[in-house]
Length: 81
Image (cartoon, rainbow, N blue to C red; front, side, top):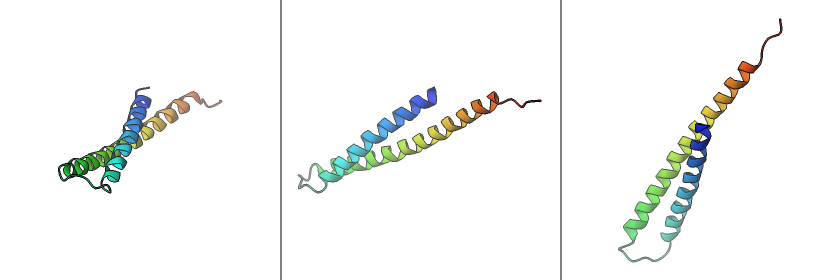
């Protein structure tokens, strides 16, 4: 149960981070005041970093979720004697 919650939160965080990084990337193509350039660059780097880390967390949660489902299935199968 806890793994499913972690997976859902990681996916939601990853989607929001990807939207944020994409918006900052789009802002790089728009003429901005020089005061906003560092903010946009930092926002892009942070958004991309959060997306990568949430992708790694999602992958780990998926692997754990798959292992726990396999372990519960194996215990239910009993050999016939």
